[in-house]
Length: 466
Ligand code: ARG
Image (cartoon, rainbow, N blue to C red):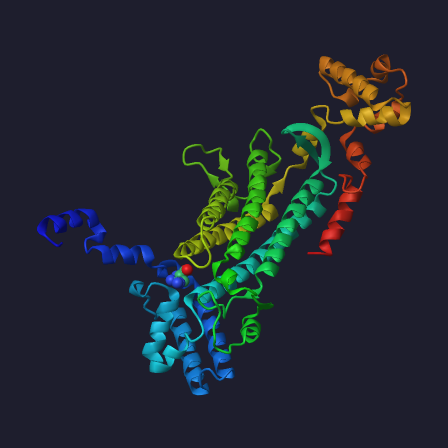
């Protein structure tokens, strides 16, 4: 049907970079080499393990195996020294490596793909990559937790306002606040470890989807590749991307924690709060307003969360409609994971630097801790404990004391004993022991509470586990 009208309309349709027609469009949409070349090392390790096993089982000769292994090692060297020419015509990393192997060693290269398919091959490569990435994330989280433990120890006695609804609630210590982040990042690390545990199964040998009639040894390749054991169902093996989804979910939750911390740094570093001062290393000046110091690194950490959460939703959406087993849709898994991995690693590194470098303004924190009648609960608790009032009544009495202090424009601790006794005669001068912020935090000795003694116990707990 190549009449002139058709070729004109197709030229309009393919126009621009697709001037050469359907072949070019197919190559563009189909090829993954642009991003999956990142998997070269895992692809080569997977192939070496496979060839070694094939020879051990007598499926290929030892001579072929030696040629294949030597060729693959040469290719790894070529890629690492930048002397490998990746071809988009060859689609992906698997075909690029195999084609080069054929050029290097000739016909033996054709035996490597015995009892294997690109479907199990890509599953192996990607699982190995995600496993390594989770290992990097685990280390980065450990470094961030260590930074927080040091700051918590340094500031176990530093008082600051604790907030709910971002309104001053009760005094806490900065050390305790730091330890809240230790809990969050320790949970992230535990999710990372679980994700490693879940993915630690060897897909190699599932072949296209049904397994193979060759007498392969999947336990042997599992061991060689550092997997705990082989996967148990060949259909599931080539259609499963839970390991990528779990990585993205773990990264998204961790990024959400990082974002909350970033938000606090942004708020605390404003002149209005003045709780912290960022080092020059993690902030920038304004090109027009000389007085400004902007928390750019914290803002970018907060923003990276959007990308990472987006990657999780993107891959969930790719997977949700796929019939078993492999579909090419699954090629879209890698860019999301690579992008999220880069973002979460960078965000963790930036945050670890900020936590270590940030200067704490204890005076501002202390002044703010005492404002807003933050020890009102301590007064109410004192009335319950020392004067035997029911809590609801103590709450009411305290409300009147706060109203009186507000009327006089002073803190609760600045009211006179006579003032307080005019509200409730049972109050004695012992009450002043609990109205300071230091007394307030020191009294919160319940397990997990903000008392410095308790915070030091929690620091010791995590130090022995970090
Ligand atoms: N590039 C492909 C991917 O990333 C490799 C698997 C291709 N398999 C296939 N049957 N076409 O998923």
